[in-house]
Length: 136
Image (cartoon, rainbow, N blue to C red):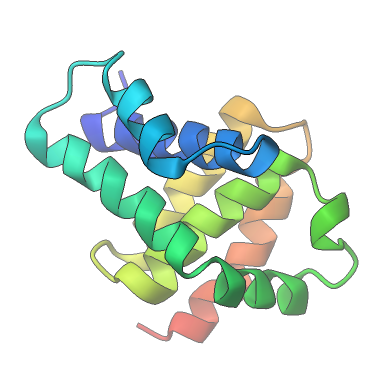
């Protein structure tokens, strides 16, 4: 059974995916999704922090993705893969609250659950390069 942090990351990914695919206000999307689950205040704040931090740093995160996955232009990358990478790179390079291995493992699990057959391998490969950049 997935832990509450995994569920929170899943919800954050859903919000990022929705914001990336349709024009909606991130805060409204997050609050709507949170209203559909029973999270503690701490886990609700965790979701908000992940979404807000990822969006705040999206341009810089996207530059990392472009550099580390040059064969996959961002606008041609699967929407779910792009947002899994954004979320994980935010946690690894900007948030620094969980070990790199945890962020990578969580991203790979999200890719297995929501991506295509090759998503987990792709996400793991890109994040392997990111983890060497993090150097922690």
